[in-house]
Each structure stands twice: as structure tokens, then as C-alpha cells.
Amino acid sequence: MGEEQHQEEEANKKSGPNSSVPLTQAQFLLWKNQKDAEASAKKAEASRKREADIASGVVQMNGRELFKHEPWVFDNNLY
Figure 1: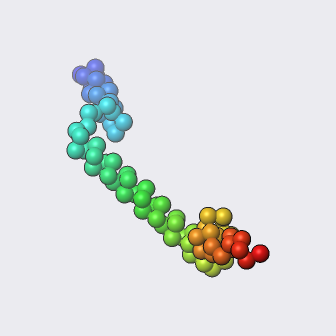
Figure 2 (figure 1 turned 90 degrees about the vertical axis):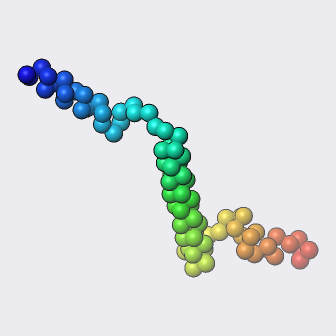
Figure 3 (figure 1 turned 120 degrees about the vertical axis):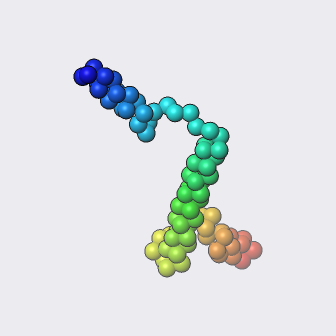
């Protein structure tokens, strides 16, 4: 009886969350869409926060942001 119980415990360990259970294509696509949505939401939030920080003067603009918001700075006709 002890041997059977030991084998069952080993089988339960193998069927944990890191086991190699094959996924269907639908399961993978669902997971992939969720991951893409999470990444997109994080990127949008970081961008929104950066814009708010620039507007309030907390952080400096990089060159691209400066060109986007104040293109007159790069106009050589003024000199």
C-alpha cells in the first residue's frame, strides 16, 4: 500500500502547473491575446504618465518629444 501511495504522489507532482500538457490552438490564442492586451495597457499607461509628467515639468523632454511639441525650436530660418 505504501508503494501505491508513493506512485500517486509522484503522478500528482507531474501534473502541476509546469507540466507538459499540450495546449490547443484556441487556448494558446486566448493566452496570447490576453498577454498582448496586458502589454498594450501597460504601455499606454506609461505613455500617459510620461505625457502628464512632461506637461507638469517633472521630467525633461527628449529630442523627439521636443520636436513633436515645440517644432519652432528646430526652425533654422529664425537665425
